[in-house]
Length: 170
Image 1 (spheres, rainbow, N blue to C red):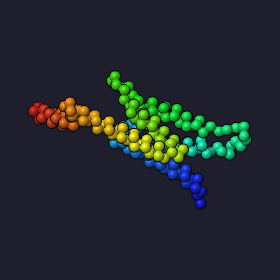
Image 2: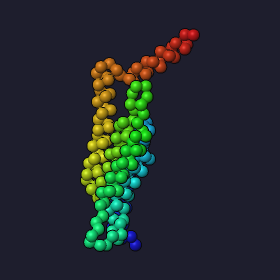
Image 3: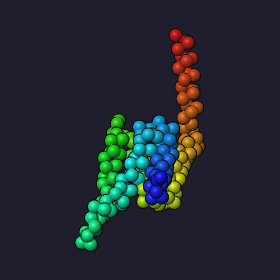
Image 4: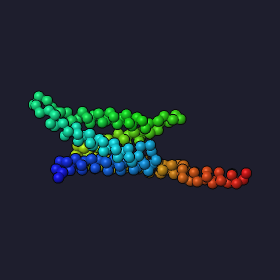
């Protein structure tokens, strides 16, 4: 039989994986380099590291002179995620690409750490804010483009029609 503490730990990592997966689905939908699997694994791993940091070494030191600092592993997660995020940033044709994806990986790790610490309300609220920020930004960009006559959907359709007409003229 699984004890209640183990069930709590399982709930923490499952919640982290689901929240990270939700952010990853948005990134996957936008066809970004880091999608569902990456965000799912980052959140799950971060939660697991937090749980191990907080509870995995309780029996290692049993003297009053020694104290465990559970924040040390969490700090290392942040450093490691910075390395992964840096791999998604590309400088190409005088433009920087991948910053939003890097930031989404970074915040996904924080959400995973929050779940690992049992801070569900904070993690869920953060996930909703991330999704709101990512989607609201795309919504306003589309609106802005349409207001200024840059309707990309119509431009692509017109370009394709013009290409087909020109091909038939030859």
